[in-house]
Image (tube, rainbow, N blue to C red):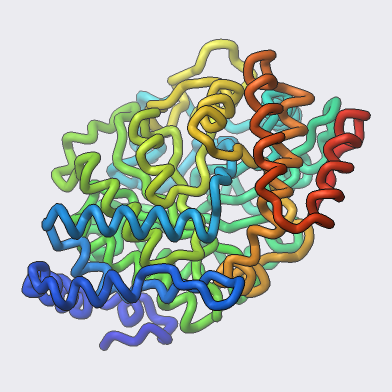
Length: 479
């Protein structure tokens, strides 16, 4: 039985409810009256100075996903842009993944880390190697990392992850420091989530891969990840352990996209219903080529148009969540999705263990093929030229604006009062410390224009003073 407040995976991600939803969506995909009502509900609305969005249920969003009417799709894109602008403005948060180890005991068919893969070089970073990687990332200008590791209780125990986090936070190189470490590791226990919280992590990220139970079990034939319920219920354990910022995601291409889309939204609804806090982020990776992995082996791939529609509808259905697009996608795809709802991108990513200290991108330990291989400076310049504010901000995390405190600000649009000046501050730091001459020239002119948009004069005055202090050598101001 479907119950979004249940703590049992097969009740809050209920197969019968998803099938019913998809059948209902198919029957109503040309019901223009109903569709217009859903679109009207989705539009952001001004109440006083605040912007409010109701979001959509998994059923309502699935109807829009099923609809092929071009005029409706244009409206979906338009509303997604409105919501993106209302909640996130032009800010785009930048991060990088840091792969600690590719040792793994699971048999995941779609991942090159699977234990039977003899073609991939196995590697685990020492703490000294982690220091070198972090310094390389700091020298680019990164402030926010997402650490990644295969599941292996011998090679990658929780103690190794915790020690690595401590190492990362300890490194202060020139003006560089990593201010936020997000963690993407295998599902674990409440006790281990408590340890991660105590270590000062930002968001705990775990991709479901697929919500279809039978498909999930077939794709994970061996190893602890085979346990569908334990994996799917991980976010509830993380919340119980005190981690109030969690990130969801599915790997599109493993199962039918309409099924995954409905289930993903059901998971968001479940977290909101049980914990009062929905997902801090949602990632939307697609299956990509890797060592021993051929994307054509999976017959549920989605083209760029369907992909764009999915991103736009996630933005509409879950307006408060951050949407992440990694370097799995090329520049052209990422550029289109920035307008439709994406609020976080990775830059200069290397998905190999120890890849940042190598001059050439090593491929022998990669998790997936990187489609966008530009430098961080090139990514920053690209965002500026598109009119976006590249942001390295981590202020909310360090000011305690996480979980329900972040959501209450985000859902009313008030978070912009903090995020816009913080984005400008961190952009100024990047321009001063790391940018090429051309990027700095473009960025400084951009900041002048952005300052004119700040209506609160007291905020503007403080921000202008902070920018002057950054030029004098001071760092890490935040609102």
